Structures are given as structure tokens and as C-alpha cells.
Image (cartoon, rainbow over all chains, first blue to last red; front, top):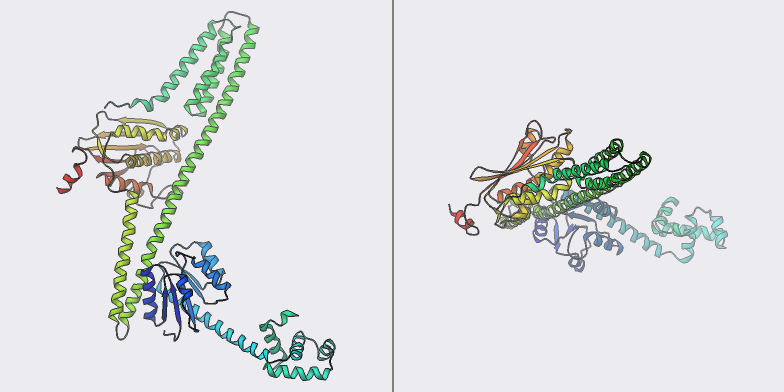
Length: 207
Length: 363
């Protein structure tokens, strides 16, 4: 049951609910930080570890749904689990469409909440792994020089070495050498690997 | 205080009397005067009077009757020029026909307006109840969520090895607090349903019944229901809240109207009566509508129980809480051969006002 280093952030303006959630999640073994408002939560520095946010929809100040939109805009990908005392269908649809993990009606069942939190943490872990991989790819891309980048951009569109050479106005030998460098620096074993990387990096879209 | 029980149910007969006298007078005048004199045109006044019955069928009947009388007068009249008489007769018939048509149009418009008004009232009532329900649900869901979270937390803290009594205790404290809050919400809802304590003023029940029936009169007439009242004379006053009791009576009456409209019988009777056995005053609203099964009668005062399509099951539940706040009781029984009786019994106000509640609380 223990999920090491996972932190759950709870935002609910009702102290009894907030403290209850805090106590419950701590008793399960999570690290919990709870806040009375989204502003308090925003001001609080967050750890760089798997986490998710349990958020009450209706609160004084910005509503939970608006806050979710704000998080998405600022590129914050923390998974959100909504709690609400009066959920209507349009509201839950909006929340789920905007990427919420779960939309729970108060009073919720304990198991539903814990399942949602597990799903949220899993989502966060996958996202973090993915984000880490992307950062790694960017670092590799940065080691390429300008010529190698050009070669990579053309190769991944499916052009032959001869065509790339014609396009760049250099000899086919030069392209071959550059291409080998690209494969090495990007740590790509095959051309399809390289194409996938270019795709992740958004290079393919440029052509 | 003298009762004016006549005003409501005699209104219609008086109208018919006036119509008959007018029509007879015109008929007489039309028959004994010369054919050249078009007295029959005056029948349009009779048709216009019939609009007050609020019943299209009555207007139709009066219009046709006037037409027949006009023709009868023409045939019976001995003096004057038959040709001029024929022209006058035709003109009168045209006038009566046109007036009847217009009167029916007015009647239909009135009916539509009343229907729209009733729909609106019903809708706003439904919306109010719906909104109240939503906000109550939210108010209660909050402490319930706290109880669920804290309860589960306490179980886990106690089940831990070693058990964490301190955390469990804190969670339990929060449960007690949350339960108290849920209780407060319920208390507020109760106060909302029947503002306690209701104001205690002397009420003349007969007068209150008359007033209340006046509110439903439009609906009663347009539903072609025959309303009768049997209000005992010299009833003692009842102590209570006028507005609340009026709400209860109106509720019974509107339910009865709905039941009658849903029924298939041609005789549409509604009887509202007030009586006393010397200790209590009994109000009863008796209809010969669809009626209720024994099972429904047992549950009909429960909250959220309704036999009406689209019914909320709130009206009678609130009625009961109001009557009980007046130290009275409600009842529902089948009417024979069909229909139902709803009513309440209230204690008479034997003690003087204002001091009464304090003194009675002791014994």
C-alpha cells in the first residue's frame, strides 16, 4: 500500500473535510499537504516527485474548474481529482475533458478516492518518465552541429542520401558521414528509431 | 361573528337567475311589441353576462337559447309587418351569433391565461423545491464527506501496528463535529418547512376557508367542478398562523381538483366542510376524483411520496408538519363511492392568546 515519496495535495475550504482527507491519506501512508484555498496551494513550493491534487470544485476564490484550466495553461501537469458536493453532469464532463483523473461526489467512498489517487499517481509517474525522456532527447539534439541537424531533418522525411546531398548542395560522402554522426549522437540504432525521436522532438512537423 | 357562507356557492346560481330573468324579460318584450321593433338585439347583453360563468359550454348554451327565443318571439308576435319582422329577426340572430362567437373567444383567452398562470405557479414551486433540494444536498454532503474521510482514517489509525490512538481520537472528534453540523442543517430545513414557532393569532377558520377557496375559484370553475361548502356556524377561534394554515387548505383543495380532473366521472364534486365536536375543529376536503389505494393513503403524508405524475411529494409532507406544529393532526381516507377525503383536526383555542403556550408547556 505504501507509495514512497508520493505527495498528495489536498485543497478544500472546509476544515473538517480537509483534515479528514489529510488524516485518511496519511493513515494510508502518503505524504500529505493540505490547503484551504488554491492560492495557498499555488504559493507552496512543490517537491519534484510523483504527486496528485485532490481539489474541491466549489470554493471561495477561483473555482476548482477554473484553477484546473489555469494549471493546464501554465503547463503544470499535476493530475487532478475533483471532489464536489453537488456535481452536475456538465460540470463533470468539463472536468474530465480537461483531463481530470476522476470526479467524485461527496460523500465519496473511501475505495473510490484511493483508487483515483493511485490512478493519478500512476499518470504522474508515466508523465514524469516521459518528460525525462524528452529532456534527454533535447540534450542529445543540442550536441548536433548545424549541418548534422539539417541532414537529420531531411533524412527523417525519407529522402535518400543522394537527394539530401542535392538538397543541401554538398557531396553524397559528406551526407553519409554526417548521417553516421547523427545516428551516433542521437543514440539511434535504426532509421525508424531516429524518425520516432524526431517526431517526439517535433522536428518532423517542421517539414 | 356572523358567517357569510353564501357568497361562494351561490354566486353561480345568482348568475343563472339574472340570465334567466333578463332573457325572459327580453322575450316578453319582444313578443308583445311590434315586429318592427328589434328588442331581440338586447339578447347580446344576456350572452355577455354569461361570460361571467367562466364556462364556454354555458356561453354556448345561452347563445343558442337566445337564438331560439328570438325565433320563437318572431313566430308568436301578432302585430306588425312580417317582412320587417323577418329582417329584424335575422339581424338579431346575427348580432347574437357574433356576440356569442366573441364571448367564446374571450372565454378561451381567459382560460389560456389562467392555465399559463397555473403552470407558471407550479413551475416556480417545483423550481423552488428543486433548488432547495440541491442546496440541502450540498450542505449535508459536506459533513458527510468529512465523516466518511475521518471515519476511515480512524479505522486505519486504530488498525495500524502499533495503533495510533492520538490520530484516531482527533479523527473521531472531527466526526462528532461534522455530525453536529449535519444535524444543524436538518434543523434549519425543519424550520424552513414549518417556521417554528408559528405565530399564534386567533383565526376565524370559516373566514380563512372562504378566503382560501377564493384563490382556487378560477381553477374550480374552469375545471367545471361543483363546489359546496358546509361551514358550521359559531365556530370558536383557532390559534395559529394564518398563512401556514391557508397553505395547508389550499394544498388539499388543489390536490382535490387535480384528483377530480384525473377522474373519469361526469359529476365533479368538491365539498369543503368545517365542523366541531366540542374539543376540536375538523376541516375536511372531500372529492370524487380518482382516489387513492389503501397503500397510498398510508404513505401520502410522507416526504417525497407522490401519486401524481410529476409530483414532488412535498406538499402534503409540509402540510403535515404545519398542522402538527399547531398541535393538530392530519388525516386521509377514501371517499365513497370514489375519491378521497383529506383534512385536519385542530384543538380549539380555549385559553386566552399569548399566555397559552407557556402555561400549557408545564402540564
